[in-house]
Length: 359
Image (cartoon, rainbow, N blue to C red; front, side, top):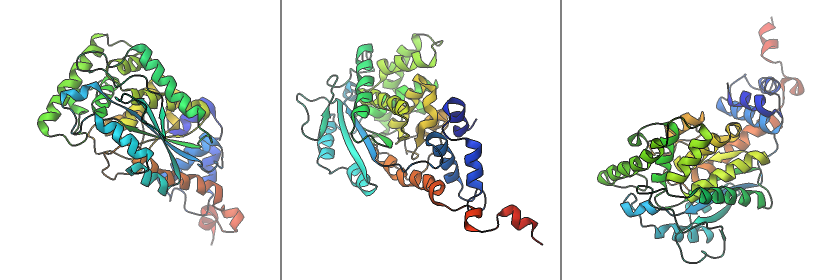
């Protein structure tokens, strides 16, 4: 079943068969716009044919620290999380430059930064606790903390004004590739070594330690029983090895589905949040779009698990939502061909069948 068919099976707005016929009747050879036509079909099915413009645009950057950084799994100290949040609030980060180039608003949310005070102006203070616990030694979060982070992420989106027409999921958190690797390995039931990458650029010996750290967290999850359903496994994994910013992104993605807002995933960590959210609500799947293929080695496995094809491959491994915002013009273009292109009939041009039958 294709993504567009999945939408139609669950809750149809646009009829996929009619949208396909519309695409094939536009003034071009059928299928000649390749994957853009599949994106148009998905948007039309989700939002109607023609789909409305994807504006206003927003990237949510959820931030949180990770107790596991004490194990040397990152090239940077955890203090960088709060410094980068302030940099984003001041407009100086990569996400600010790239989001500005595509007219997307950047909203930075502190869900778990390890700081004594609120981070200041321009950063939403929704802090659940000062960073997670060390996932290699104990559960990173309590069940209550997971619930509060999910709710906080949902509330941030629900309270945005104006409400975005499209949402990019971004993140900031030193050590969060370790958490994301553990989550992905747990949900996809694969070895830690297949998910763990260099993150911020750690050397090989530190990467080996990162594998051991992830394996320690996975043992607790797997000792809890292999017969858990998808939703139960996702909640258990969030508590054992998750991050507050990742849980916040999950909550925002689930809220976006309820609000009928397409969700653009960024790189590895953002995609893992999408995978967790889809485990909690399988109907979310058609609303997720993969922006790019990250340089993190586990990202392809996560995208396969989501059934998504990335739009870009730029060697990114930064996060923040940077790849997500660059994909927005492609999605906008997919909707534009349904809104703005002429049909053969309206343009007075013979279509393919008419041309084939000409003497």
